[in-house]
Length: 285
Image (cartoon, rainbow, N blue to C red; front, side):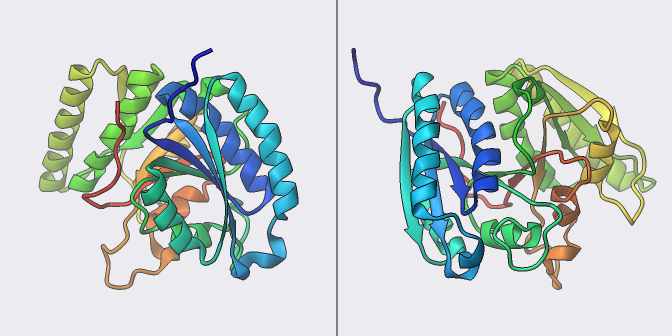
């Protein structure tokens, strides 16, 4: 039997705990199959989180079990045990291993310096050059990934979500919900409509199945992404694609950023986050 060639890109499963591993793997497997990529396991042992870290022995046992499942789909995998500061390890590993998407578990109820706490995850992942998916629980049904949502507004950064939305639409045949807010201001409204026209043009050229949803006006206590998530509370989407707001304000506290609310949403909708940067990695078709 001919040996399969090493993939040009990988889906990374980053974990330091069992809970993070299980949630991340449940999303990594379908994404690797759909995008035809390999899976790389990044077990990070950071002294900062040593009290809650999974042991190398238990991690190896979990990975061996996962590799048997992964190999049954013809997907190649690699494993790295890495020690040091999480943010530096992830940034370097992603560049060296050509990771197209990093996936990890998130515990939305945790606070403080815990590896899978929302604020700590944003801090460790805010400079990486790839998309990262934060999964609050294991994927219960792969059919959920047939329904993906993202928001579009007046800012140019909102268009950065289009490539990843198109990947799901093209390769997974997902239905993409494009949500946009209503504005009183004429300029903001016109800019939003211009961005929306651009989305429609791109999706029609790529033959992506999409639906446009107006989510109304967003009050100051909420965010556009949160209003989109609420819209699908009873008809659950499998994923929301969002963009980080790092560096957009002088006072850049993590808990004041809109994405902090988004990733902690009470509906446990996973979020695929993109950092706003020109050198972000894109998919090699």
